[in-house]
Length: 201
Ligand code: HEM
Image 1 (cartoon, helix red, strand yellow):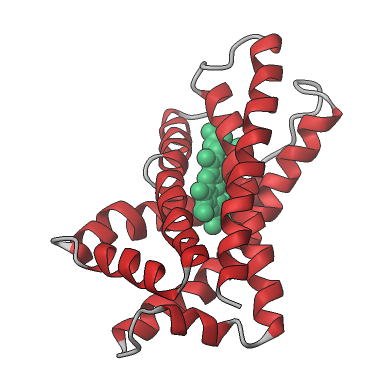
Image 2 (cartoon, helix red, strand yellow; image 1 turned 90 degrees about the horizontal axis):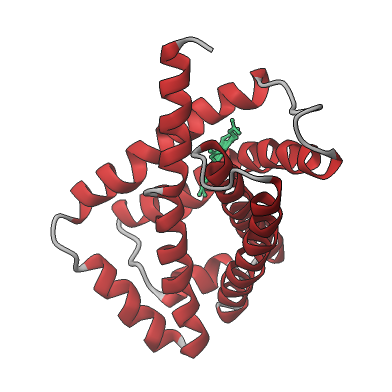
């Protein structure tokens, strides 16, 4: 791998966790407030809206990192060879699912940003009702459940490969423990994300 490729891969990996992965956790946690009713969600959402330099923070901490990770991710997804020989059968499946979930997320995130953030920029008010309105269509409920599960899987499984790439999970034993730990993260975050979807229905 050329030096430039190596550096790009490292940036892709790092940005997937900080800030994009951290943003995913904050985003799902804010949405989860809807399980306490519309008032609780509206309060949490307007707190986020009131942060100073909001657009600047969004561009630096969310849009640019996710654009780089997403665009370079599409390139990797179509060019990378699998890990056969280096890891076992299970890990090869996880690696394939990592790429498939990433590609699905391109579609899901584009749609989600269009009907929420861009709709808001064009005048729709951010509120519980905005999401409840989207979920009045059952197909959207299915699409969002798939999107949340894809994002949570991609992040949890990605955290495992991030830890391997950065030398945090170096031995086979550490990697096995990492598999269980990231599976727990998948279940917890999945619960938070899916509960939030149902709270808007
Ligand atoms: C919710 C948004 C996303 C989050 C939180 C996220 C997070 C991550 C993390 C933590 C990794 C592991 C990095 C590593 O292996 O060192 C990763 C890998 C990857 N991501 Fe994402 N990602 C997101 C969206 C996307 C999108 C939209 C794509 C577009 C295809 C994508 C494609 C990939 C690919 C192909 C890999 C595997 C890279 C490799 O192993 O060489 N991701 N992602």
